[in-house]
Image 1 (cartoon, rainbow, N blue to C red):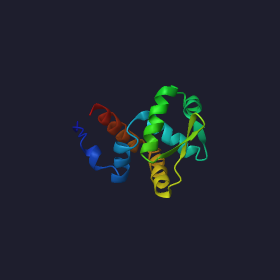
Image 2 (image 1 turned 90 degrees about the vertical axis):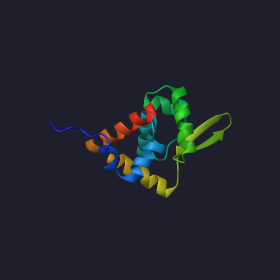
Image 3 (image 1 turned 45 degrees about the vertical axis):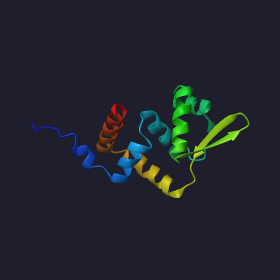
Image 4 (image 1 turned 60 degrees about the vertical axis):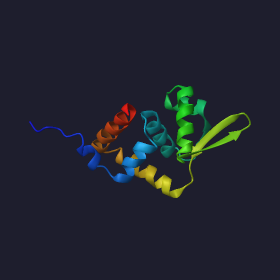
Length: 123
């Protein structure tokens, strides 16, 4: 049986997508949120409502949404006492997000991406 070399996973991934995973979408919740906003690009909503749609805890979602806003994937705006989030209008970032979501449809990419997210959580 051939020995599985996990280090090859690093070498075989598109460098832009690898950096995107390591620096911006470095948790499974962020991954879910990026897919949500990609699939619903005109959504502008609160963390509570987004959490409800995503089936996740609102407090956890709030922190992850704030980090995605810092990473320029989302835009965070204050409306009264509430913060709302929407997908960035930046064309380059939207293109990178679209490439990431499309790549996620391939099993081999998902396996590599999961490996990198878990590895990043351990660091």
